[in-house]
Image (cartoon, rainbow, N blue to C red; front, side, top):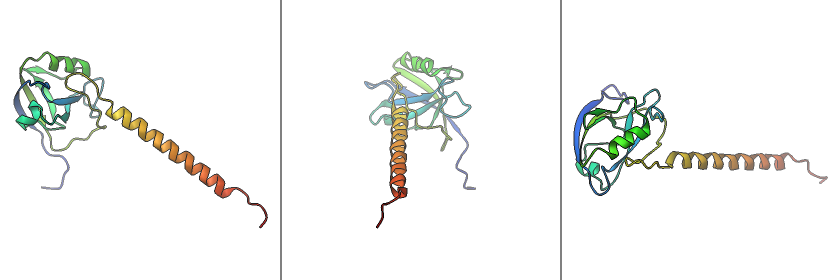
Length: 152
């Protein structure tokens, strides 16, 4: 191998039986919420520990879902893709493109059952707040340090 971080994608058909927790994975992406820059595809964000996808073992986080029950997922909004998953029935056939590594904008996770997860938004707000507090503290520290002192 030449040390490249990317490998050729592999297409795979996976049949899952919907369990009590649904299909057992969260999705991200869509033309309105791109997970990978310039790619409106639907991707697996998280495999739920005891769900149907985890029990099957072939679907992996980062995989691109090309079709569900033969219906292609290209050019769909995130909510339209979620609705397709919700209405797919008990036995679901997925056409998946697996990749060993993907360039991504960030882990904006969303549940396969259509409930969005605030993971990215919460993390981003926390990070911005933490950086703002750290910057304010540093400025105050420097001002105190540069303040003229009285006679010694």
